[in-house]
Length: 412
Image (tube, rainbow, N blue to C red; front, side):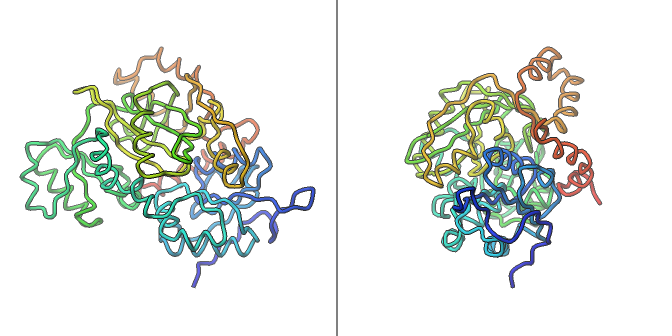
């Protein structure tokens, strides 16, 4: 039986029509939070109707650009998620609307059930045969090695008895091949093992949640977010239709950043070159972010992760001149759009997490006051605040205790 949506919708039970009587193609955003809010604002300001499907309270629910919000019980189970999206689409007459996943588990669900979804919607996620190379880190690092793209040394062991062979390589990061379920269970993106005892302890904890072949033991590249770069693009027909490169100047936590708190655009041909090689190899389509870290030991960029969906700071694209959600939407409905390249020196900030992050960095002398001031001067986008759409930023503050509990930062 398909899950029943919790009725919190704000529109009627039929598709929206344009003034000329033709049916408008809208968008369905699965997952709210600030990435979903960014999609709603990108499309909504062009009068494109947006339906948000979410399994938790989120600031995006209060946006003037969310034509409809449907709360559901759960979006983590793949089959139930697909059933829910199809049921809601049928109920409200959203056949042919464009799907936007905002979380990795939803990307996986859409990729594995692509054929079912494609009967009702415009599916922006590619089938699993392609998506697996951009979602599973074990596959990502394997392909990177084959393509000559540097990445951190990564080990997979079959049993705990093999761990002593890695003692000389400590410290190591223990992380999952696919991060979302691990993150929900632990509240962490990765664990750092400095000693053999910690290595065994964390491996045992990870093995209690994952298959051993999904546990990655990876070298730790020194440095924080300021050495981390992102290639962001709308990719189609084997080329980047539009692109920008950004650098994480601040993130939280500093070493294994769960998320960026301040990001700024720049030029970096090396990041572009490596990313183009990777995306061409898998014949990628859609919007994507590829993350790298500059290794100070050898001066090489090391591929860390691929996000085959909107990422946390995709809202930086609009002030930089590359509106990623709209580019994808326009392509899906067959509307031509001109290629674009992001302007440099444009900043994006998530104030609610950047204030404590910046304060900590200032107190530890990791950040200079002049650099912090310059970042504020360069900021052109905030994750939730907008003068044209102010309620989400107010809602986010009020929801902060709830969101911290949901993300495992505090215990209930």
